Length: 369
Image (cartoon, rainbow, N blue to C red; front, side, top):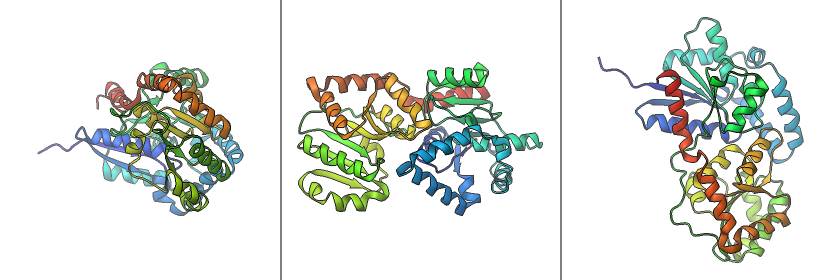
């Protein structure tokens, strides 16, 4: 009888972009090597209404109330997630996962959100046969306790500094934690034709995560300071409002405002700079494409660690105001883009697009699959 392809189950969640982006990259890689792969968000599958409500809360914190996210983040960091999975609201999640294991029969499970690892711990303690499961952490440096305190056999973090920090903080065995990078899809690669930035030929990709007045000020200042700038704005739900507010700028310059796109890799490869929030997924996609990053907004908690890593590796800058943003872009344009080219070179020395392969190789070394 013909043997079946190996099966990967990736457990993710739709809070922000990082968890699903990492999940998609890993599934894509394994499918390319002959595996079957499924990405499942059990939170959305089991409690769709509550999930949408908590997703709305997260989005509200990101856009309007970052101080509230700081409080929420601190609470989740100190909570006992072994008990959390047993509270009435979440109690149905573990049986749903049990059913999924029985119907799909995965050979390997990768968790890009920590809650699922504790559910797998619980199932294993109750005598359920659970295949090897790996935790892939989707932020750097400022890594909260829930990522590190499950019984996952292997934990993958983005860089060596994060690895050293969590081993010391959580007293983990060195062989349990590896630094392999953040998984990025294959399409995120450097452009081979992008010329160094110059006045009149500058291309910027802008993530509109700041509060709306700040976003408008940034866009207007960029369009005024750099004639001929091609500016693409990833605006999400703000797209309609921004188009209305910036109607004159859109008519006078090369300004594109998008509510969503399936072509993120193409937009990134055509850009000299990315300006936006310190979210891990976009930041590491920029690393893979060698697009220097200017961070103008950081969500308190885990994203502060992403910013720390970016600055330590000299792959971008933190800009604290619109005026600082403009002066930083001008600095990057000096001397035929000398500092921009140096940042790209620094990015080329990071894991970048090789991270997904490194993670798969580490899993094979650990489990032989």
